[in-house]
Length: 313
Image (cartoon, rainbow, N blue to C red; front, top):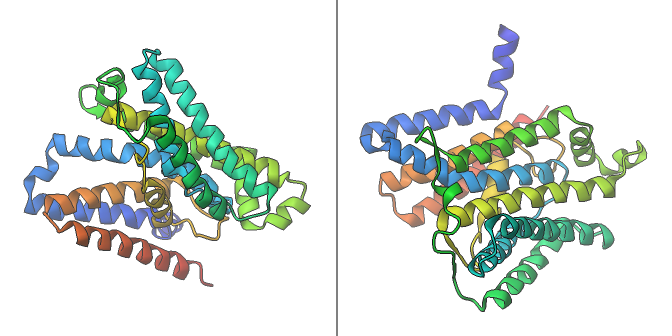
């Protein structure tokens, strides 16, 4: 019993859970509307897209990679989906093409990082302009509205309560958890992130596996673009802008170090949940939006500090 209790206290996600509960109780006392079913559903919907993007970021960050172009990728993929739907293409092939575009974008980032032996952070930084430029050229900078042609996923509630968006996001978490915990690919994620050279010398095909990591990230980002389009019903090239930093922040808050090699998807889940709850809490308490940005930045710094101190011998 003591061993299990000690392990629980050593997990950062447990403290995040306590913070979420504490924030919810305090906010509910101040503003009872916080616990209204409508508000809870709103929180679950808001964190669904971020959850999928953060799940992909978890794989990359544990492996020692970054992709900060995922926001631009979401903009491009969702615009392509919307363009095809506006031209009367059925939603299934339109969405499939958009998801494939997202996979190709992320694969492109990983491939160039390997070919030029450059940090994926720098390559993805350059790709932001490329992907956003393509989206602007395709849409001519205009908003693409689909007029209710693909609202089923965004509007559907399981048992008239749980948003389908959140269920899909939850399945993304579960899939990544299975990959990281129970598969050979997952062990390679940790091995490459811990020591790339040692992984190579032990016989792991580092470059090949890195491309697989980026491909998985692209798949999750493509699904996130689909959910966003279904929920909002209109997109533009700037859609998704900034979500990459939120995703990285959620992974860091969840306890994954920036250096790679460590991290768990459950930490990312509670990191995303905390960001969603905190955003909702600040809105319910009518906190100045400028102070909200300060709060999120401070939260990430505190999480980095906790992770750094917990890793000290």
